[in-house]
Amino acid sequence: MLAIWKREIQNYFLTSIGYVFMGIFLLVGGLMFFLTNIMSASSDLSGMLGNLNYLFMLIVPILTMKLLSEEKRNKSDQLLLTSPRSIWDIILGKFFAACSVIVFSTVITLFYVIILAVYSNVTYPALIATNYLGFLLLGFSYVSIGVLMSALTENQVSAAVLTIGVNLLLQILENVGSSITIPGLSFLNTVFSWMSLYKRYNDFSAGILSLANVIYYVSFCGVMLFLAVRVIDKRRWSEG
Amino acid sequence: MGREKGETCPMIEIQNVSKRYGNKLAVNDVSFTIKKGEILGFLGRNGAGKSTTMNIVTGYISASSGRVLLDGYDILENPREFKRRIGYLPEMPPLYMDMTVDEYLRFVCSIKDVKKNYIKSHLDDITELIRITDVRRRLIKNLSKGYKQRVGMAQALVGNPEVVIMDEPTVGLDPKQIIEIRKLIKQLGEDHTIVLSSHILHEVADVCERVVIINQGKIVAQDTLENLTKNVSDSSRFRLRIAGPEREVYKVIRELPGTRTVDEMGSKEIDSFDFLVEADRNADIRRPLFHQMSKLGYPILMLRPMDIELEDIFLQLTNDKGEEQ
Image (cartoon, rainbow over all chains, first blue to last red; front, side, top):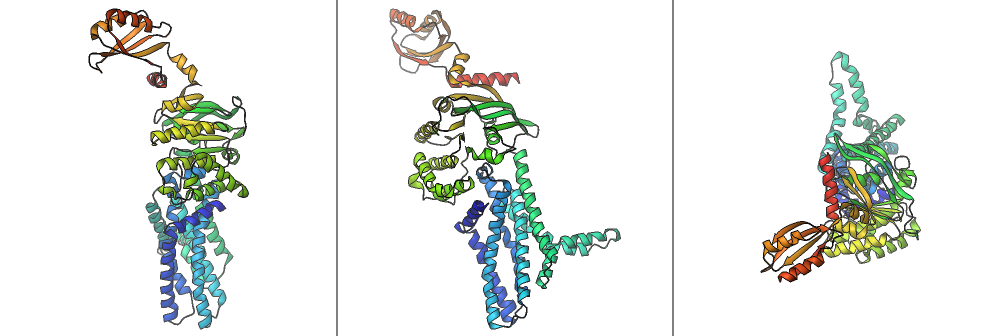
């Protein structure tokens, strides 16, 4: 797993992908910080992170689209799948590589926290911590969706578009649920809002650290990665 | 290493392996064994099921039914031990274009469980053997096709696997590279068990000790080349060029004892005609032919024996089977 992780990280920065991702992320992040914190003289970071979340939805696919689709297309998956590594090793290595880039980019934004700490009065440091935790967990969930989509297709553009589509769908799931007013189907409301990735994030940004929410995100990633493993394994049984 | 040649214990056993894609049987009940230390040729036309079989044997895809055993390890029950003992060079070498040769091979070392402190000397040995030492620092995407193929081969040797499987290793190379790669394969055969798939018959004849021939997903023959040649034909063929009138010469050859068929091949050189003659192997018609022609005063400009080629065996086997179905 470590070897795969290392190679993917290397690859992000040998090609332009890592730089494009971090460049956009940090540029928009800086602007957001300027607009929501400096211009409006606020020490609340949740606005900036909330906006960056939408950005994540759109740019995380840059990190994930190639992960498995490109391997399949170039047939370099023949090297991985005929090596002693298990499919879980491969998928986890790739997942953690993309997550690492996200963590790395996010760590850079801690610079803003320092600015806030120096020039303003940060009332609740814990609020910032839960905000960041939620932000990262949501980011990891996007990565896991991206990994699954990349496993499903051979074309990286389709993988990226699919990922963005699914991300958006999960984002609006809550609204879909609450708009269902048909009497017998109101349970869907509960189901959808339970499943919504974004609703849970709101708890974090309000400073609520609930174990249930953490477990939700972790298991969400787990299920997506499990499905990705199944997709790859199934392909070995059905295709050439 | 240092294994005796000619040991007969099976290294890989392929038992009743089939692979189905929808309704199509790509590989149909294939069974054969690969002996320790041998170089086995796996021969078949394009689309005969070679690559599918190779992919199954290396664990890239799974068979619909049947078993593959390597040294007693089942590929489904013990994939890790199995895959550790096998090196695979697929038809298209599985390379990462954005890496340098060295980075790539180091990555392969790490996924193939090569011990950290052994990596350097291991890679030195392999790159020396494959003769890619001078390109180790170059990006793979900038290498020529021949070098890419070599890097693919180096990749298959990482971790010192007992078995090396190569799927059409010389496709797309120029003649000089082909000769070099073949030489390399022979050299590797000295201490590895090798399976080499190909549709190029000379290649197999040149390199392999035993061949398995596959057609339409089924094995049609497996034997040493010698036996295969012997079984297929008891006739020999010549190509003749004689300076004389075509019809008359034709008749004379026709009437020689032992001649089976004579084909007129037209005129390839001024005032002479070419013939393709097939005769009984044990009736040497060359001497009577010479005397007859010399009596008639028609000089023989060329007499070239045409051995029964692997092509013939191959075509005969694959056609026979094709007609049966």
